[in-house]
Length: 328
Image 1 (cartoon, one colour):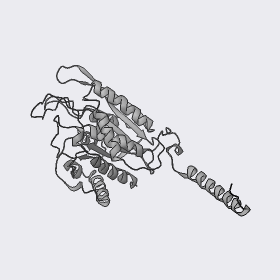
Image 2 (cartoon, helix red, strand yellow; image 1 turned 90 degrees about the horizontal axis):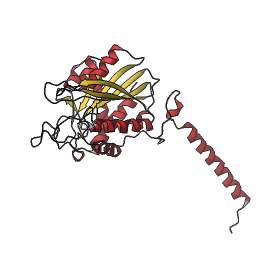
Image 3 (spheres, one colour; image 1 turned 180 degrees about the vertical axis):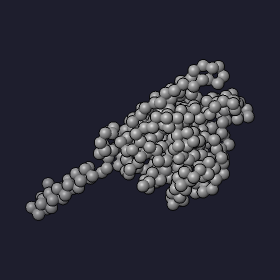
C-alpha cells in the first residue's frame, strides 16, 4: 500500500470539489426544452443540434419498408402511427387534421388526414416546414409496369425523413419563432391528369385562412424530392417570382453558399405545381419549394432507397438548420 502525504490529500480534496462544482454548473446551464413553460418534456437528451444525414436516411428506409402509402391505405395508416409515436417521443405536440375526399374512380369516400407537429407552441410567430407523405397510387411513368408497385422513396419519403430528423433539432432551437411540421395527405391521390392534386394542402390552407389561429406563419418551406443521389436544387420559378417569397429563397440559398453546399444552385430552372401554391395563394403563407426535379426515377418503380442518399439529406438538413438559427 502506497502512503499519501497530507499535502497530497489536500490537493486531491480540492480537485474533487472543483470538479464537482463544474459538473453541477454544466448540468444546470445546458439549455433544455423543459426550461420553456407549457411544453412537453423531450425524451431525447443529446445536447447538440446537429442534423444527422445518416440517421435521416435510416428513417427514409424505415418509411419505405411500410410499402406503398397512398391516401386511405393500410400503408398510410401504419405510417401515421409510426410518425405520431416518433414525434411525440421527441417532445413534439402531435395532432391530425382529418378530412374526407371523393375517390376519383369509384366515388367512394376516402379518409385523409394532415399530420401536424408543433414545437414551442407558446410562440406566436412561427415557421412552417412541410412535405407530403402520401405516395402516388401507381408508378404511372414507368415504361415497363405503369400499374406496378410504387414505394416513393424520394417522392414522398424524403420529405418525411428530413422532418423526422429535424425533430431532434426543433425542440432545442432558440429564438422568437416556433416551428410547425405539417405532412400533407392527398398531394397526389391521382389516377389521371383530370384528378385534383394538393388536396391536403388546400384543406390546410383554407382552414388557416378561414379560421385564423392565434399565431401567424412568417415563412413556409416545402420539401419535395430532396434525397436524390445526384442532388441539384435549383430555385423554383414561382418561389422566385412572387415578391413575398423571393427574400426567403435568397436567404436559404445564401446560407447554402456560406456553408459551401454547392448543390443549392442559385438560379431558377423549373416552374413546379406543388403544395406551396395552395399555401401561398389560399393561406397567404409565403412559402418556397425545395425540390430536385431532375430525378430519373420520378413516378416509376425505381424510386427506391438505393437512388437516394444520406449525404443529400445531410446537406439539405444542415442548410435548413443553419437558416433557422439565423432567423431574427
